[in-house]
View 1 (cartoon, each protein chain N blue to C red):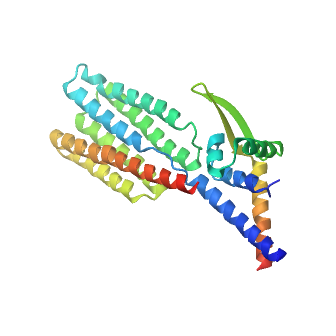
View 2: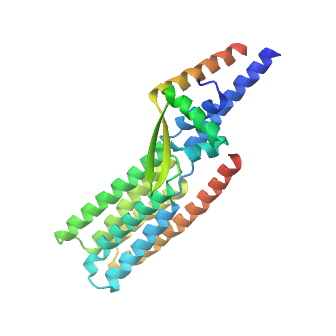
View 3: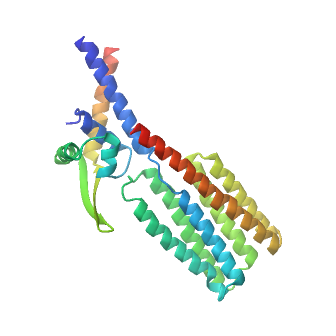
Length: 199
Length: 89
């Protein structure tokens, strides 16, 4: 009886260790809102550069504002959530891509080397890179679908006309930022509900 | 030290993350503030977890992480469990 009880207790402990480790690793980190925020920022920058005053400031100002806003919201949301290696890896991918894109585009624009088509192509290609890395890390087919759309957009922006590029970019931002972001947020809400039930 | 169920759960939780806040550990374990605080203190005294207090937007936060000593202790405990269970089978 004692041996059986001990075995049962030991097996329970193994289960406890496994479930707790999984709980930690699978902690849901909500990043869907960032896709929506940046999608809106892209639209705002495009609208400003097309119709607003001082069009050259449109992209840098909007992007810096979106970056600051992302930082502020993220720090508020992350208060009671654990930090995971996965979260840090994904954050690093997006941060590195964002900074590289910003530096490259500002440098090119400063030297007068940036045409609209090249600008849109670089934007789409770099977002393709970040989405690809993220989808490979997460093994997430939906995000890889977004990656393919971004790469196709890059091709159309460079090979097609200005109008074709702009229209494609507008559609892609809607699909891969706004719609994908909302999809992420719904998935994250479901995952969190499931976590609460199991907690 | 590792054998206590709540302490074992805490070490296992912390093994899956880089750092975790007190309230998250409380939610995941379902322990009371007092019990959780006491067990975490024991683990800290043993050098298995490290604690850091900080303020985020003027609100206090207590952050915990598993130390190398804690990770080794947990690994050894798991290995011992496996041996015991393997021997019993």
